[in-house]
Picture 1: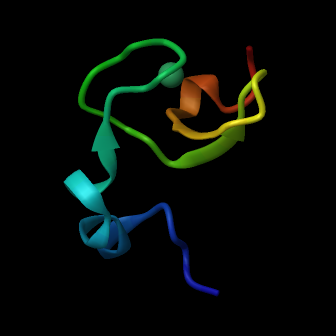
Picture 2 (picture 1 turned 120 degrees about the vertical axis):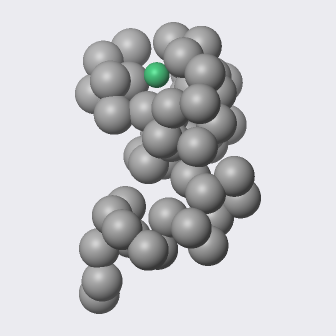
Length: 53
Ligand SMILES: [Zn+2]
């Protein structure tokens, strides 16, 4: 598998992989990680929110 969070692959994503992180509200950050939230919904979060709550 290729690196899906690096380089050219990002440009295929909506907004080229950038957006507002639903956890920390950082805007225009790269949302590279899928995390399951407390309510069971899956969301793309930034690297800062990958591990921490
Ligand atoms: Zn975040």
